[in-house]
Image (cartoon, rainbow, N blue to C red; front, top):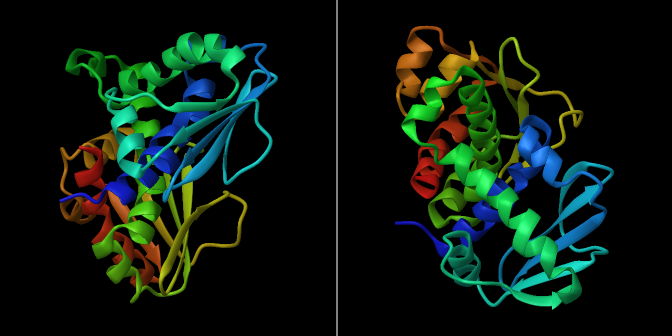
Length: 252
C-alpha cells in the first residue's frame, strides 16, 4: 500500500524533478522552453514545495519557496497526486495572465515525462529512445528513493537504523550519477559535487541499468553476474537495498 504524502513527495521531488534532464536530453522539450524566462512554484499543503525555473533555454529544479511568476497550489497531497494522474487541476494563486504557457508549453513538457517514463513497448526498440528512458528512470528512481526514506512509514523505520555516509550511484561509460546522503533518520539526494562517497553502486552499462531499473533483471542476480557492483562501506548500501523495492511500488 502506498502513502499519499510520500507519493506526493515522489511525484514532485522525483518525477517533476526530472524535467531539467528531459529538457537537456530531448530536442522537442528543449524547443518548448527556448526563450522562456519564468518560474513555476508548486505548493502542496501538508506536502512538498518546489520550483521549476526556466531561464535562457535551461530548466532547473529547486526545493522550497522563492520568487516565481506562476504559483500553483494544491489543497492536499491527494489533490496533487490526482493532478499528476490527470484527474484534477491546480489552483492558480499567481500568474493567471501566463496561463497560456501552462496550458500549452508546460502541458506538452509534462506529456514528455509520460512519453519517456511510460513508453509504448515499440519505442524501446529505438536505441536513442531507450538511452533517454534509462537515464530518466535512473534519476527518478534514486531521487524518489530519498523521498520514500523520509516520508513513507516503513521507509522512515528503515532509516532509523541507517549508517552515516554518502552513496554514489552511477552508470559506467556515462556521466550519469546520483548521490544520496544518509544518516540515522535522514536521507537526501544531493548535488554531484557534495562530499566524497563512502560507498559506490555502479551499473556496468546503460543496457544493464535499463534491465535492472525496469525490473527485467533481478538486482541480486545482476550483482552475481557483475552487471552491478558495490564498492566501499556496504552497510550504507544495505539501507538503500531495503528501500529500493518500495520505490518501484510507488512508480509502477
